[in-house]
Amino acid sequence: MPLTDIQRANQSYRLGTTITEHLLLCEDECPAASGQFTRLLSELIISAKLISREVNKAGLADILGMTGDVNVQGEKVVKLDEFANQALIYRMERSGLLCAMASEENADVIEVPENMPRGSYVLSFDPLDGSSNVDANASIGTIFSIHRKIEDAGCGILDNFLRYGYEQVAAGYFLYGSSTMLVYTAGKGVHGFTLDPSVGEFLLSHQNITMPERGRIYSVNEAYTDYWDERTRAVVNYFKSSKNERGKPYTARYIGALVADFHRNLLYGGIYMYPADSRDSHKPHGKLRLLCEAAPLAFIVEQAGGAASDGRQRILDIKATELHQRVPLFIGCKSDVEKAMAIMQGKV
Image (cartoon, rainbow, N blue to C red; front, side):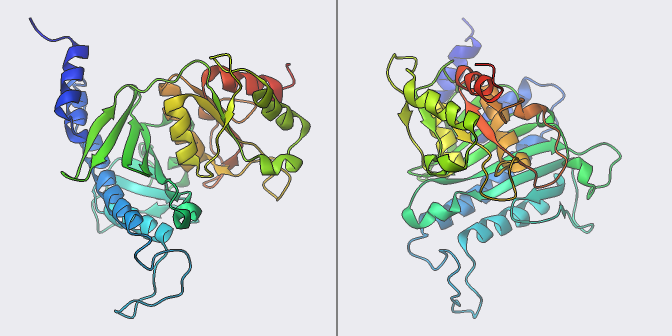
């Protein structure tokens, strides 16, 4: 008797499906697939392995913060987030799959040089989210978003990046914690892979991740309470005083690294909030960057059955107008985000 799709998937999991095998299986189900996306993700994985290696020895090497040290070759020591940025740019601009990139660390679009092969994708990324937590050995990560280049547009054209979130081809993140993980979506569910250091491969560990309708965790930096407006404080107070899906109070959990807080809530169920505040000129725009943080995580959370909003509208319905545009973010279980939106809009 032939195996069903679910039986085949479960069998593949038990045998240790690699990310490459998983992508090739997905290609088989899409006759129009050219293999370019598989190659692109493979290049991102190599970059992530390099970054993971440096993260894992961060306490042993002079790569923490702005040390001002000089190594034995007479070169200035590069801090870890800059290393991650350079590693991604170096690998990806030589892949032949991209025509341009945008990084949180670079002010402008990074165009693939004309003397290198170019492809039909553009990549936005935060090379090392939560890098300030490295010294404390807390989890950090790399977030990425992939769009197709606009047809007939030049590679360095800003319009390639100023897009709606729902136009993303794929999005994901690498988490460097107690283990190194890749979580990604290409619009057909969310899958997680854990790096097995003994074989150097990412193996399928979390298949078809799905969030509950309502969570049990709220994540927000309550030290900024005095900087929030009345409705934002009402949202946080709602989760502090409400019962979760188990009839128990919501639990407060906050790591201080977006990708780490998001990952925990994705697996356990919860809502992460980074609202706008009055501390600086970014009010009312929030702090998190739309293209390389909010939009890719919004794509992931919706594929897992959750939701993401800026308090007024769906994150994926926002068309970017600036490369480093910032937005407030409420992201997590669908019912929790909808409740936050209703409070922010004065509907309850």
